[in-house]
Each structure stands twice: as C-alpha cells, then as structure tokens.
Length: 153
Image (cartoon, rainbow, N blue to C red; front, side, top):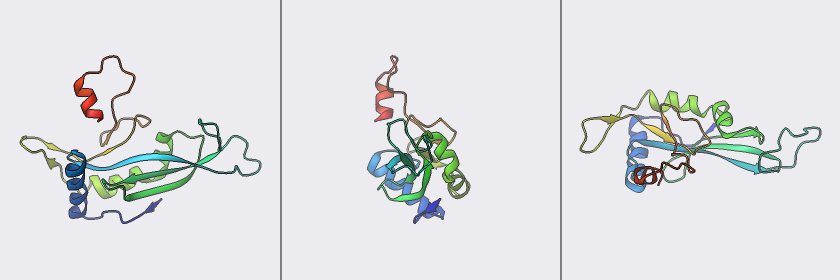
C-alpha cells in the first residue's frame, strides 16, 4: 500500500471532514473507497488468474480519496478476478484507516443535534457494511422511498 499525503493529525482529518460537509453535504465523512480495474496483458501461464467479471485481464487499483478526489491511500496489484471487498480487505487500507483515523479522531458533533457521529468512509454497494464504512442502499429494492433516494444521492 502507498500513502499519498494522507492526513496524520486530528486537524488534517478535520479539514477532510469540513470539505466533505461543505462540498458534498456529508458531515463526518473521512473519505471514499473504490476499486478500478486496470487492463493488462496477462502474464504467461497465468490462466484465468487476472481475468475479471468484465471479461478482460486486469489488475485492481484500490484507493481511498478525500472530497477533492486526492488520494489518501492506494493499493495496486491484486489480480482482477477478485471482488472489491476482498481486494479492500487485503489492501492494507482498512488497517491504515483504523490506525490513522478512527483512533485519533473524536466523534464529530452533528449540527443542531445532541448526538455525535463517528467518522465514516463511504463505499459502493460491492463492499460489505461495516461499523465505520457506509454503503448505499441497494439499487434494485422495491421498498425504496424518498429517504433512501436522498441518502444514496
């Protein structure tokens, strides 16, 4: 894993929160995580090891970014046949976030509320829901209402 200008102090993470709240109206957000398949020519004798669900050979770039799309942490090199949640778990990014973010940053008070919000990192529906990782509601749900749509927006 490579860390690129990642915050390492409370005030740096506070800046990340402030930008997410201002730009994306998401208070308490500390980043966004996703994977991207990078097309490769499969190494000889690798068989289907790098062949992904999109029907081409790839390696996966997994990254955590801030509200301005600047990289916080990057991992590249996992074979393309592996799902995003498995790549994420093996990438070192969850451990980095746990060590650097969730241990040094206090809960963020919500404006006009009594409760505080612990920092979360947002992800897409390919990832599992975890205590500090927030994912959208599934897209093909019949029971969607306005609240679900607004949350996903």
